[in-house]
Amino acid sequence: MSKMHPLFHKFKAIVGYSVAIVVIVVALAVSGLRLLLTTANLYQAEVEQLASSLLLQPVKIGRMDAELSGLVPTLIFHNVELISSKTKKSLFSLSRIDVGISFKDLLLSQKITPSQLTIKGMNLHVTRTVEGSYKIKGVDLAGLSKVESEPNAFLNNWLLQQGEIGVEDSSFTWKDEQNAGVSWFFDDINLLLKKSSERYQLLLESKLPNILGDKIKLAADIEGDITSPSTLKLKTFIDSKGFNLNPLQYYIKIPETELIAGMADFSLWLNWENESIKQLSGDLKLHDFSYRLKKRKIVTLNS
Image 1: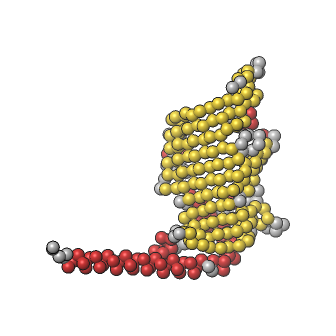
Image 2: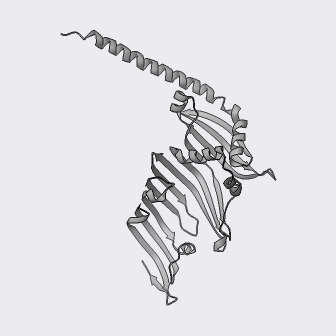
């Protein structure tokens, strides 16, 4: 039986030692990181000051924690509030924000680089005024648009570069003063956006306003530069049952056509490229659908 070459034994020993060193370094780094995370609450005041400077309004954090989930250090902010500078009352609140930190950047470069963002319990109120401008309750949009500072540029770029953004257990209220004060409330919103290079994947589920129906689901796969719409390739799927079509007349106008009533069950697939629809397919079932053309007699289609 032939003996192993001495070089092989040396190579095996070197590999063994190298693996052992890596394991020890990672273990020490994780242990040190755990120790660091236990003192995260000491930086709460500094984080509040930074957030206030970015959003141009006072920010209050109820509690700040940190934990290590696998190899992802996560900062947790509880009961985050935007405070009115005048009344000192809460204008906008989030029940929880989780910010995942890149372990690789922290270990190799000693840089704190956010890599994941999850927002929980967000209640967003958006209003379109009669003049056509938009207002977000609790946020000074006019003030933010006037500021072109490095922190704000960093915030915008950071949001676009996140590997994963999630919104859980949230709600959205839309009020449209241009359309007779239409007010729609979307509840139980869960959204997940993942990014890899120039590819984005989106999953969205939400309860619909009572006037529209029950629930809606949407999935999208987007490729290209999102700041340049002409480069985008989009594949999307949307699904809903018992969707009330009538309220869509506020936003979808068909010349000389009036939609009287109608419910729909649909599952639709759409491909978009070069700023146009390339393919549209799916299943559509209409219930009690009524319409009128050029103010003539109402036509009813019964399923």
